[in-house]
Amino acid sequence: MVIEPLDWDSNYFGRRVARVVESTTDAKRWTEIEAAARDLGIECLYFLADISDRATQDVVQSKQLRLVDTRLEFAAAKLTAATSSPHVRQATQADIDALGPLARQSHIDSRFFFDPNFPKDTCEAFYQTWLQNSFNGFADEVLVFCDDQPHGYVTLHRRDAYGQIGIIAVAETARGRGVGRALVEAAHNQYLQWGLDSAHVVTQLRNIQAQRLYQSNGYRVVSASHWYHHWL
Image (cartoon, rainbow, N blue to C red; front, side, top):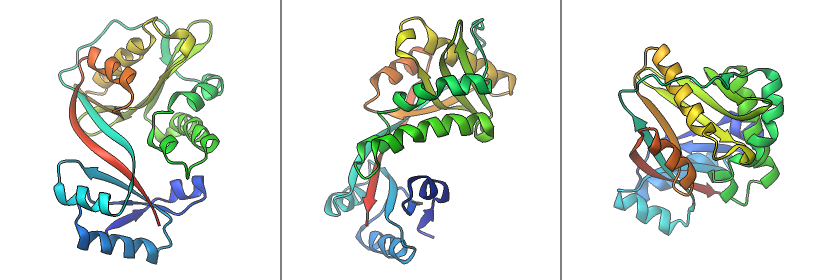
């Protein structure tokens, strides 16, 4: 199968969505991909493309696919335990409810906000839903930074060989206080408790603030790809 229908995305956005399963293509292969999508009634194709493949870049230009994001993957190897912040703890449902507005406004650098076919309010609600679903089991752990009230969150996933941050956000009123660093360090401590000594995270090229946070915590870029959306 050259594409994978995405039921959750389709149900959430109310549009038939699928992803291209390969990272490279050529003109002949893309014709097959489009034909498969049309046969399934797909309206939007997500394509995470290899930026180093010339044939792929020729296709996306000739087909005028919408470039919505440059995806950067960071990795940190040989994690070491950090002093735990007394303000970081496991999330409760009350925290998730309080942090919903933060989730709605904190991920505007993501690719969905750069595709006008997805309404802004729907994209905002997407990340509030992501946070709630993470608390409900989509993530392996959700941590919050809280003193008098919650000021930030990070969602954690346990992979076979490493830990991975899903989404992370810090309230604007709490920035400059080391909240982001405390959340990342707490994530590392959790990974080590799981027996994992390395970590990965993905962010956008346009999200300079997130890149600085990860780099200051020992992460380095290990891959870069382009996200394209193709509307049929």
